[in-house]
Image 1 (cartoon, rainbow, N blue to C red):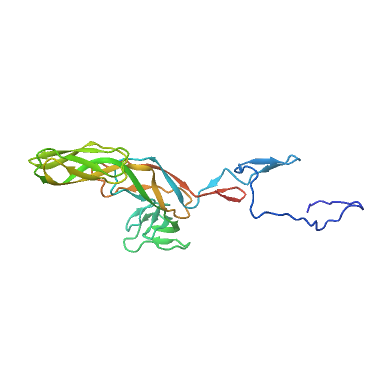
Image 2 (image 1 turned 45 degrees about the vertical axis):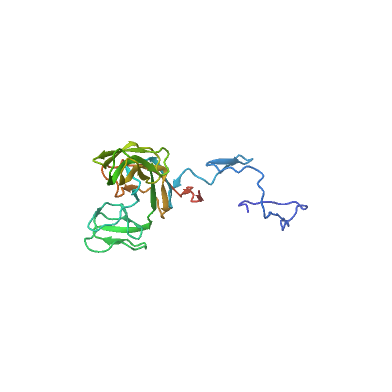
Length: 293
């Protein structure tokens, strides 16, 4: 009702009352126009010149789980047999220094933020609480934030080396070395070296590309037998090479990502990959209305 006086009304005016208004809504709706996303800012204007504004805002707030991770730079030198491990937060350790606001996770996957600064206790257990009261741990004070995200890595690579496991015997000429399987984009090739009837080395002639798994080395011909070799494939992360297996909960800022190299990544150190992290998040208007995107 208006805050000002209304009336008086004429003798023939109708009295306010039940208008017996009936609106029918079909069970199966039909869209008769093109749906467009509600924009930010002014969306209309009244006949009296008063503008209508959208409930949305340009201001957004990150909150929720990790939605996806895009690989910006694939890196190189990662072992396809032992791909790196994705680490969002380091695992809690005893007698270890952590700085203010640093995040860690425990063995259960719970994520904590350090409200203190210093070393964890030399003797004791990791934080496991899920309540709102922080837990003291040496110089650290752990506040529970939520569940840590988890992800797996897919590596696509090329033939890095062929290791001779058994040189065989009786070879009178260089045998044919076949690199079979692995679903490559471009197949690799290799050449065997013979010394006194034994295969002493297999060198990579063409490394190929796009191997999704380790191929099988098939050695044939050359008059000998018994030789066995294993392929080593290394490369970089695929374009969508990081798959989220657990989105985690309650992230309000972007976590860092560390790739811990697999045990097979020896010799030359891998060149690190770069990432872009996307979230499930909310867009929040200053007045407090929340739009879930």
